[in-house]
Length: 189
Ligand code: URA
Image 1: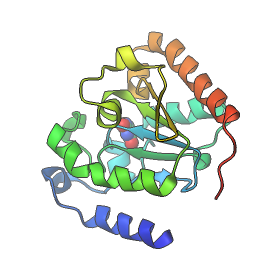
Image 2: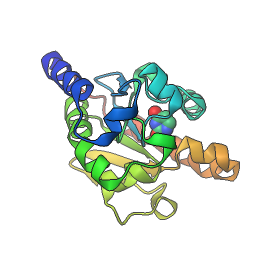
Image 3: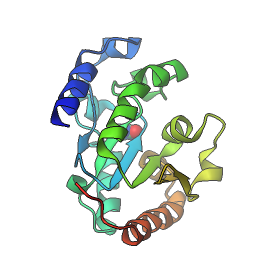
Image 4: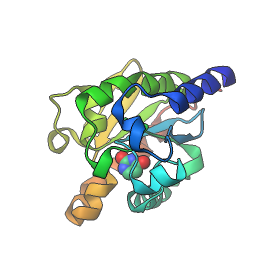
């Protein structure tokens, strides 16, 4: 298992399969508990993440940390990754071809972690996991089960910072994650 993680992270670090790799400071593979019950998928690194090589460490990441704490989860308990591992210029959303090129990395992460629950943050994560025609405003808060994995889309924390009125729904979604984890049997190592 460790070997597969090492291989994966090396592949991410050397990847230059799309133009996003050109303008960056650091790759941001994602980090956290490799045996996590909960995997969280965001969109792509921003400036703080690009500077540090770590996912969700800027303002949106700090909000995510507080939201997790509110359901008694520490960052170390979960695995946090992004759809793309390189920062899109000017924080634009990743293009469909960039997402498609990067997708094997996210797939391998998901295979290695074997999460019981996946929380999708925002439209990019929703579309790549559940389908390109999905809309976050329609799908948030609705569970999908796929191969025994429970998947829940919610608003991206950056959207909550822009529009605090969305926080009420996001809090309901976080509580639903907490309840789902409580319901499911503990996962073997
Ligand atoms: N937004 C994301 O989608 N991912 C990060 O890592 C940071 C901000």
